[in-house]
Length: 167
Image (cartoon, rainbow, N blue to C red; front, side):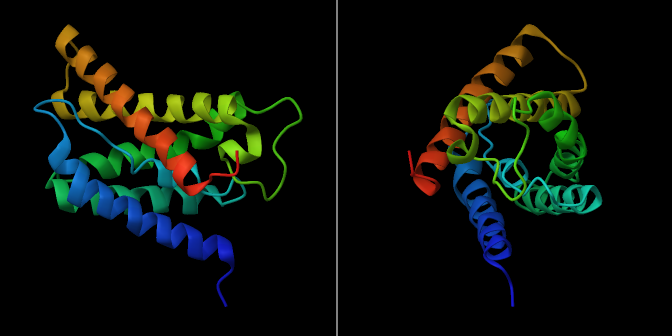
């Protein structure tokens, strides 16, 4: 029988995929994109094996690529983020360290820590998406990254308050 962690993450995978592919894909402004699907990688358990983390990131990215018709752009970016997540978590590790079995949410480590953690991942995601898509960097692209980051972060935090409302 599946444990609760598996069921929650399978549900989260499909929920985020459908929101991203069926709603946010069409809400984005002309050159400003809103992405919330990296939440899936952010909230996977810390104890997940690294290879499985990268595979699940790739799976989420390739699923988003189907909706966006982007030929592996999202798969490569999310696989890169998944590969980097242990390093990011190591840099942002709380003073007492991570407790085994605790989810990487605002309820487990506080809103301030979660905002820092999700901001790093969301900013890297936006940066890599725009850089891989455009293969250059300009003031216009930096503005796209910044505005997309702000809108995406608002939805990431809103997601935490809707699906983890204990505080």
